[in-house]
Length: 375
Image 1 (tube, rainbow, N blue to C red):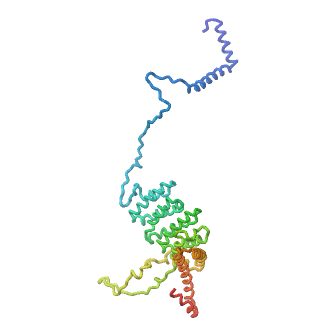
Image 2: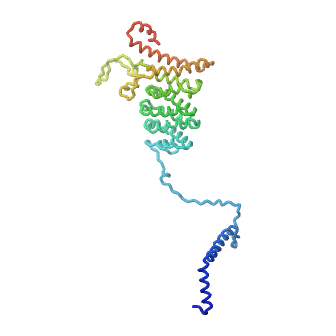
Image 3: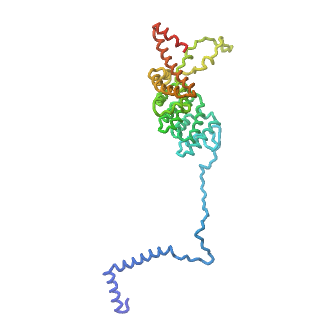
């Protein structure tokens, strides 16, 4: 293998040196690694070799080329067809989709959903009664969330005005939940939310006084609100008017409760009625199919103003407002409303007195309270 004896000895000592000094081979590999790092550093400053006929791009130019790819979303690009059973808003959304967007975290999405819902319900009023189960929870919860935002509470108030156009019979099943959201907003930390909730309560007292008078929670919470320090000033817009509507809703009016009975004979074959009975006159102010005895509310037939404790609480919270209004209203702007509140409270008080006097057998008590019959 080796031609001479000297080459054999040289090969022997070379392997012996590698075995005795292994660090020499490692240092050699380290030098190679160091050279690689140095080459990487110099790569940033390496001179670019241009090909013949190729121009170098300037560093100040901006590459405006855009690369696009085709994306197909079959489910989102389907055309929605409007039908009489499922109408769409001007943005092509159904009522269920709009109710979902009413709970969106983005304020702009909620505002667009409010406008779309109002537009859809205004054009199709028949949808309100059929979708109250979805509309009331989705919209009433926004009273606490949007009451402090002037950009949203105007849209929300107009939408609630559209919803409150349905009959009391249709709203009765959802009224308790509606009032619960309003009372929650009435205890909010921000004054704007409380004032907005107060305006919606005024709307309910105007639209559904027959439903409000059976709500004990509304009465107790409103009395607590008037007794607290978070109520608005006495001369705030529509504050005294709301109190007036509140007392009117709970005032007891039993004038139609005791109408005289009439008897008549109806001949179906001849289609004749033996007596001229005007049912519209008898039931003009009362619902002939309203049977409170079958309701779950124990106070459906008894107004809170007929209870001495509730009447006393009303007088305690309204007396300071009445005195302040009479003493500080120099121009007499709020005088008619204040006098109306005072008159309604007086009627409620004397109604309780007449009720107690009617149960007494003493002739002296009857003579002393006879003047209350025409009060």
